[in-house]
Length: 249
Image (cartoon, rainbow, N blue to C red):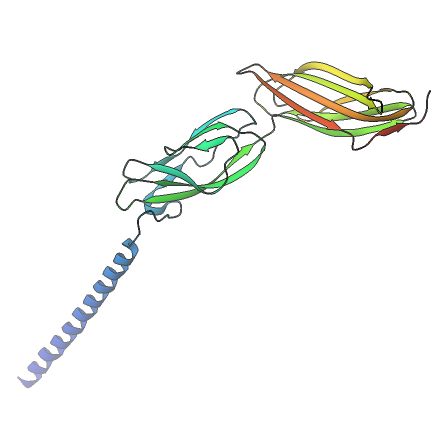
């Protein structure tokens, strides 16, 4: 009987210890959950926060002065209505984000513009999620020196490379003038043709003989697009200084 009583008391102590540990674990778990749920109103969270995801993954490329329309949506368990804002970085000048998540406008200049957007729902407290994005504004028509303008005897020669980055053909006018110290301009290069979409680095040479004197060379290209809408793109290069033609009258 004594041995049986000892076994009962030991079993009781063991049961008490197990129950105590279980209560402690439950209390710690409850505290952790309470801490995790203590989110102040409007507090932001990283992408995927609150089980929310911002779409799209990437934003489309655009060109200067080209109408731009894009937008953000949320996926996950959110409460309408949604509110959107840029919380850091900058949008391309000319493009705005409205509160409904729509990007509208036309970029004023080329460049890579990075920013962080936040979407917030109408829950109380609101759930919010952020995501980093970039909008690339690409020059529709690019112009660069291939062979810089230079003097050989009484000639000025050179070449440039043109690129059409837009998904449409453009009507291109290529014009090169040598401007003397007295302001007199002599045309030393001209072409007018259809620059096909996707053309990269097309070489356009220029050159002619010139009288004795100093000349600044101006290279101008004008691309006119009519489909799907009318647009004009312009680029210019010029020599950093006057080129001296020392041979000739």
